[in-house]
Amino acid sequence: MTRGPAAPDRPADVVLAGATKRVGATTVLAGVSLEVAHGEVVALVGPSGSGKSTILRLLNGLEAADGGRVEVLGVEAPRSDVPATARERHWLPLRRRIGFVFQAFPLYPHRTALGNLTLAPTTVLGRSEEEARARGLALLDRVGLMARADAWPRELSGGQRQRVAIARALAMDPEILLFDEPTSALDPETIGEVLEVMRDLVAEHARTILVVTHEVRFAREAADRVAFLDGGTVVEAGPARQVLDAPAHPRTRAFLQRLL
Ligand SMILES: Nc1ncnc2c1ncn2[C@@H]1O[C@H](COP(=O)(O)OP(=O)(O)O)[C@@H](O)[C@H]1O
Ligand SMILES: [Mg+2]
Image (cartoon, rainbow, N blue to C red):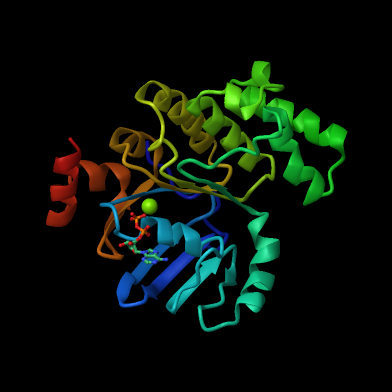
């Protein structure tokens, strides 16, 4: 199913326009253009080294573009020539509106599953412990882990830990959720449970989601659009089924064939 943006009148939550990034002599991003509307779900697909993670990192200020334009939640991001302290000032208030789930983001090891969910809401958002716990429990329930609220991270499987990490991101009520290969580090038997949680999330269209994934079937079913990246640029982008089932570009075709 492909749906349009949830809020067509609202400006795009994410705008990349000719964004470039070099690290030393390496061109990491060679001019990336992509817009993601509020409530839209976009999968970033492409070979290793094509710049997918760097794009996500531009969107929460872990990296700054050297050229081109990056806009997140209606505000233009400072480029790399802006001093780091000024960039941090820009990103600090924005970051709490942007959730990030990494490939293998460690939970806080000395806090329980529920404790992982209450930390940021109490310290950053100033919610009461009671409120944060109630909401944390509801989120654990949502990812099927209510019964493990008091478990320590080491007592959880990889898939369970990643579900807690997703719930932890949701606890901040982010407007944008960024996922960087959320199932790549998992055992095959736990990938499904994480994808199921993500399917449930994207079906809501309540927030803007960018997900880097090699799970083509998931991307086809869950994403509104797919952007295929290669060599630091968007080679083709369009409705998920169009890009994945009938790719226009030979590089997309070659990549997808290798995955099958
Ligand atoms: N800080 C860095 N230092 C050196 N090379 C980097 C750095 N960040 C990214 N790169 C290089 O940029 C390219 C794209 O990286 P990345 O965005 O991680 O790609 P992907 O997520 O698609 O695998 C890779 O070739 C990587 O080695
Ligand atoms: Mg990556």
